[in-house]
Image (cartoon, rainbow, N blue to C red; front, top):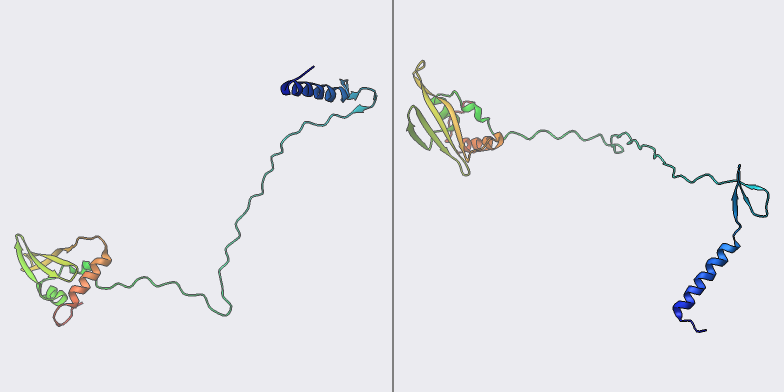
Length: 175
């Protein structure tokens, strides 16, 4: 008989299956345990395999210790940044004489009723101070101001104000 490649493969697979099952001992399940044919001793059943959940121990962070160098004291904390000029809020409430002493004469004056506006110019900013007439004291007082470019950052205002003050002519400084 002639068999093709596939026929031989089927025959070999079949013979292999018969040989492997024929060599195994047949099991008979009994009351307390399993026995192998031809052997009367009970064979203990292995317990079913289960996957154990292993809990990893929690790692607690080590307490932070201050870093110290041998023979050197720890460095002091950095000081807060220095203010580069007076606070812009000091502009409010000044009369004309006090304002001239504080900032110098204005670069320009314009009338915007009910206010008189004094303008100051620096290299990178400008300032308008609004003076209103105080009936009780019969003089103008500054009640508002505006920086250009407009900003809400007090450090930028301080720097601008310091620049304007440094450009004023030398007069008695009323701080």
